[in-house]
Length: 293
Image (tube, rainbow, N blue to C red; front, side):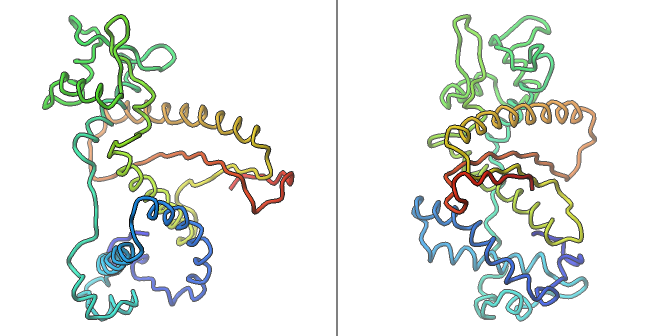
């Protein structure tokens, strides 16, 4: 959980909840298991991960757990993290590895979001229209779409990049169509690593806030059933994808419309959905356990 220096959350130490660390052990082990699997698959070794965690512990303790009106000392950071004071002194000020959204990725997301939301670029069902490269007057076109988001990048440059990344295709009428790949980074597309960090961060931050505060602040729920046949699991997964995309498109349209009247500021909002399915060895087959949490 991230908190502002001097806040109640920042000043609350582990000693105020003596059983919190013990209770965190099992869910943290389950949470980290797929990340450890990803580390091994990607070639990130345990010593490299240990160094990253050491830097993060120092950075978070330094900035998120500072006492209001008092200088954060090496000794207090050492006390909070369990890291030796000399190591704390060496690591402080280095800064945690934080990645801002790459400019090209930010532009791509903004243009696609508008293509999916603005009524002039969607059909009666809310689906993105195929767009001619250019058009006369106020008729919708790809050039007009890009220009409605930015004047700093030529539409032709955006089109060339998107064709290369297979985000769009040219149909038989020489119109530009948005394809499904635009929603899911794949292959060697570096944007998938950005979304991995952003979406997992936001989901975990919401869950951590909910278990740390007096009452859940964020909506973080799931419908879950165990003991299913593979056939039913596959059918439910396909249906949940349809429901998820409908919800995401609706949220995007409403946010895009509201954005046009918004004064702007420093706030950030993320509405995410995930679907997961696997063979669950923890539940006997046929138990039919299910629920919502």
